Amino acid sequence: MSEESNQFTTDQAEREASGAHSYGRYLEEFEVGATYKHWPAKTVTESDDHLFCLITMNHHPLHLNDVYASESQQKRNVVVGPLVYSLALGMSVSDVSGKAIANLATEELSHPAPVFHGDTLFCESEVLEVRPSKSKPDRGIVKVHTRVLNQDGVLVAEFKRTVLIPRKEHGSSHSEGNVE
Image 1: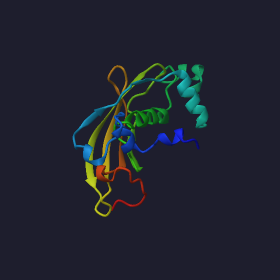
Image 2 (image 1 turned 180 degrees about the vertical axis):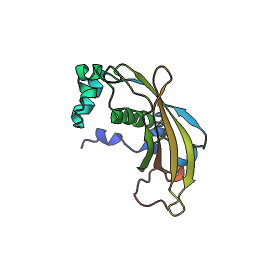
Image 3 (image 1 turned 90 degrees about the horizontal axis):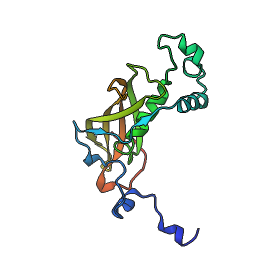
Image 4 (image 1 turned 120 degrees about the horizontal axis):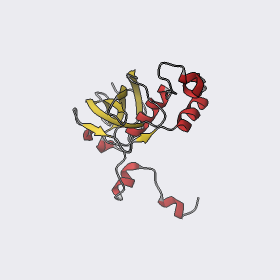
């Protein structure tokens, strides 16, 4: 490794001390009731949907076959649900889990309305719970409720997730273990 390449670091605290944009939050930076509107939004293309279906081996014709989909209840292709969830999860990382030690759970995932090729997804997360660990002072648990809306403001997906987050005074610690 060259001397010059040693100047680069993946340590978030050191990177942010240089003036770089903060990525994620420490436990102390979460407040119950706060809502983060994630940026940027994402327009889901036919290519996004087809590639995700093929990579995950979901070959349901509702997602991949225009003729089949035209005869369905929706009359057109529907974007596969796990892609919608994955996009929302990814869109929330810089605000919610960018400093996470681990994602602990996802619950209550629902898709109340379909997403179609060309829809633009907007995502927001509300902080439901912030709880310091009782046994490990360097971390705690944050629970958020994430909502996904399309360009018309229709709720197309929502879920709750629990994330293990480091405390600021121990920000560089990423050791694993139980929180309680």
